[in-house]
Image 1 (cartoon, rainbow, N blue to C red):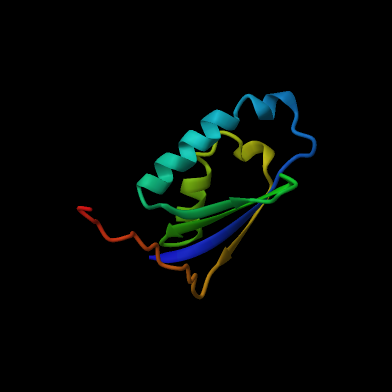
Image 2: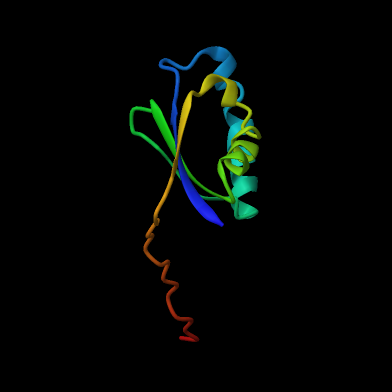
Length: 98
């Protein structure tokens, strides 16, 4: 399984038909993250760009994932296969009975 960075350009300002689909977009991304098909995503502070790291066998697998996005028809994108994607480990504090 390879990892791909997908960079999306978002419309500015958001048109009304874009805004109404944002909750569905978030639900789709959350489900794909739960399934392990998306490992991370980020939104720029100006809300003009969105990035997702997608786990897939190839470009066609990436397209299968992003075509599930309700907003895909309004977000031009670029797909780049990653050599690696290093993310810091999440540390959970130890459990204490005190």
